[in-house]
View: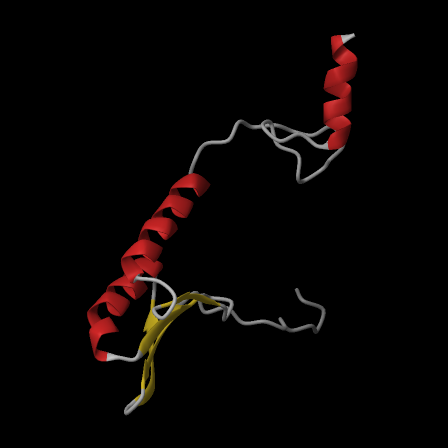
Length: 117
């Protein structure tokens, strides 16, 4: 039940590859994942002036003019791996959402110091 309020944003879950060509103009390819977008950039890079990967929020996350797609792919895979690392479960007694077992909030740090004395 939404009480007569409709969502203000739409989300289609796609990643877009923009191929920019001086003669042909702009071609946009819709991809269902970053892996697919990377493959499409690799297959079209030689034939276009520039290729861009645009994320789901509309932000340009890769531009072929600034970096090679292979280098960006390595960085993307490293970032993806670091996000999948298991983090020890920790519940902050102060309900601070930014407090983690390996990165405590100020109140939890103060509690740890007080416990030592």
